[in-house]
Amino acid sequence: MSGMDLNEILEYLPHRYPFLLVDRVLEVEPGVRIKALKNVTANEEFFAGHFPHHPVMPGVLIIEALAQTAAILSFRTVDKKPGDRTVVYFVGIDNARFKKPVFPGDQLILECSLVRSVHGIWKFAGKARVDGAVVAQAELLCTEKTL
Image (cartoon, rainbow, N blue to C red; front, side, top):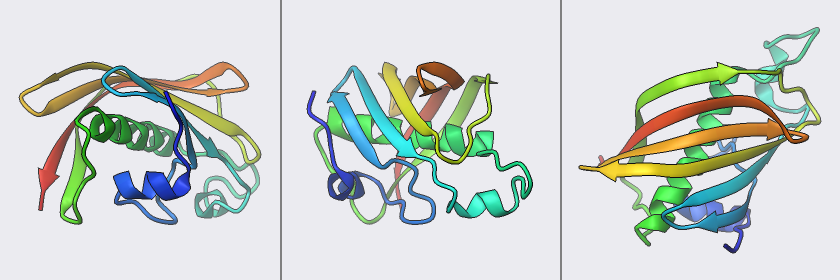
């Protein structure tokens, strides 16, 4: 159930600034669940255009943050680090719901649990929270590919 700092996260995700959306893993139980966080700062590039006078984190990026969290769980579950030519792709997003907006200064808590893994397709249930309140949730289907 140990956490992971940013340097460890970079070993499991190919994403880099400005698209890395996981700052820290708080807890990970391989094969079961993961809890991570994203500090949402006013310096995020997307706030310049979404929306200039009322900055809101795009919902699609919240889902992407959940997917990055799920990818870490999948690699920790199989006890391997991805190679330079390994990526995890979405194959489906089901039942996505956006409950509240996310603003600069919020701390996004990202929680994913493994629902199942069959024939290389991983299904996760994800929830994003701010101050304990669910702001977004979705079922994520992902697969690993080697380029």
